[in-house]
Length: 483
Ligand code: HEM
Image (cartoon, rainbow, N blue to C red; front, side, top):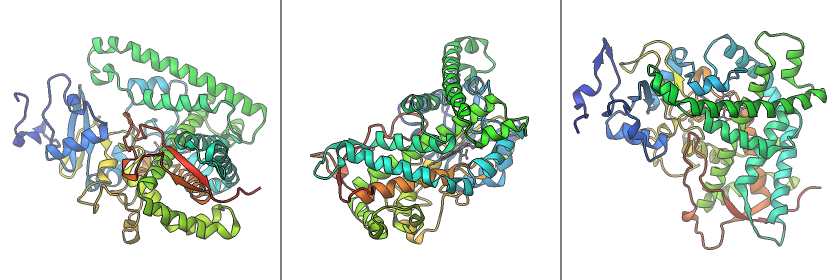
């Protein structure tokens, strides 16, 4: 225990700063050993509880200071009170390689380029009017999802197991691409492989990031850098083909229209590709993950499934199909989605931020340059803020008016402040329509021999909280498909 700092020195004053408390550290690696063996958001919650750091905790990954935010109170300070000071993103070596040819939005530092693209999202790409205009695309893709489930085992009389995870991921990818580019991709599976790889590559931290002062670490990082470079080149070739074909068809796509008018210095061809991929990837993984957990929770909680299904069928039975304009009346389904986002926050640590200037948070100094991780997953399961936090109970929202739109800091699956997700309405519209359709047309059951409380809820290793195993279910069609 020779490296254990005694409790009184754990929130030390150093260089005139009152730093947040920290668990014991090892020389060189700092706090990294604390994260071994479990998912990052789970390890960080365990650490903050064990070492009595309920709000803020200071870690060190190699030489890099990392501040972890674990309470709604501290999240409010970071994403509202001092939002401007925390509105930039760390530029790791991998991020620099990935954004060499064009900066998009999610990983881009705070500044004019990012501000301009956010405005473009708010006004053009993801505005409420634009999201409404995608309705025919969503309805077409939701009908295809229902058709695909019926064809692969859910048709009447047929009751085969279907890989619902795979089908929902395909639906979400097709909807995002179809809406943004005007049609589906021929090579959707190739695209999904790039998204998968993007999340793995972008979340990688190299030795050079951990030990910026060491040339040896820099030299040893070449292999990771090379892998990121090869990935970037492959991705841009793929996007070249997609965008060239798109331009040849002269689609009136917003990004290309603005670029052809030369109305901004920021919108180079490299930026267009990067933004298109940012929107595809940010919109695909998160919404697919939400749908997969929602269906898994419904299977684990048959009473919730019955109530949600009764609501959807009651609302649409007379019209024999699900219509988007009726979705806003489905209060219970909306609670189911909220509860899914609370328990299974798709980005459990949001996207890392960086402190731009030393800043006082709840009496502690967060040093300039520190990476800041908001553990939104732990905060939305915090027993100080939520009753029975580990239980899936959509009814809690009957009396609890907290929402995920960035004003309730105990519940921020879309982040908050300047960096809040600009695709929230688009993502939710995709999730709601698909879920309503799946519950309307089919009765669902588990594979033989599996009881509701045995549904596997293991999360996969990584920075997103996706399911480790695909969800295989039996679908029995209850209503005829509309012609
Ligand atoms: C259920 C669906 C979704 C969830 C849970 C989600 C969640 C998030 C989160 C947690 C962040 C980081 C916020 C922060 O750092 O404070 C984010 C950022 C972002 N999201 Fe989403 N997202 C979803 C859907 C979408 C969709 C459909 C799109 C676009 C098509 C999108 C585009 C983006 C972009 C561009 C950013 C970066 C914003 C910036 O850095 O300024 N997201 N999202």
